[in-house]
Figure 1 (cartoon, rainbow, N blue to C red):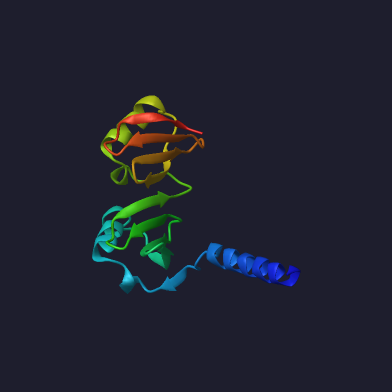
Figure 2: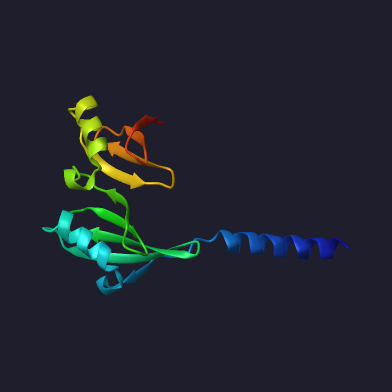
Length: 146
């Protein structure tokens, strides 16, 4: 009886570990990017070139991580809609919703935005001083995120 319990425990452990394993990102060609993603990149980051594209499986959907020659990392959904932008330098004003940009410029004039993320229910920006601010989907300030 003890050996059966050990076998069941081992099987449970193996199944748990294998189900927690994250799928590896797969490097793909630029041709796999949706036209909307390509247009977004050309519009807002025209001076940069794409250095790497990774296809990432999130649940049942694919997402694409795009790395640019200027150090910017972009994340797009399968339809080419932007979900996240990260940089060590200031992001272009054109990629930040106007209401969020206005709020940051008015309340944090010595800081600039280095990351923007669209989440399910809200948006978040990270400032050059490390402060993270939450906004509604409509761009209204909610709180400082900790």
